[in-house]
Length: 229
Image (cartoon, rainbow, N blue to C red; front, top):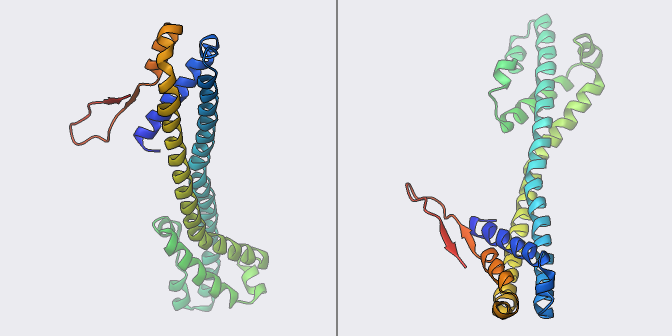
């Protein structure tokens, strides 16, 4: 949600709280009370979507970072084993090809790590399993390394899909905000003036809750808040 939508949603939630705390007043106008229940339902749906929106990419990012860390560790271990194997053979070309020390790996981005992992895995597959085992790397570890690389590659598509989901959630929230605004303006605000006679104290509380206060995006030194009813 943008700042205005957040402020509007906060105001709508405050309206519901005020109404629920003054049911004897809202009960004087059944249609108004029903409008409050509708607004409460819309607010709950927006809250649910907002939580989902905040969790989507966060969960993907956390999982991706875990896989990236584990893949990087395997890259260091397996490239080190191949480097040792190449040292025994006197194969300087292979040594240079798999020279991935921790200080180097930590400066690689995700795409560079994937490329490095693919090359190291390909070189490891060329070595006889018993020879690689002598350097401390088992066949099972190679397979797990392969799986990690595949998972790491997949996060590009996963994040793209999540981005599409985010857009859909944003669109749905926007639609619900509009629905809440229409309900307030065309039902609640139309009926609320009656409370000036029937329950003036509640009317004042309603008007206060209905006042939307929000801050526009700052433009250099412009930080003045603006208010809208």
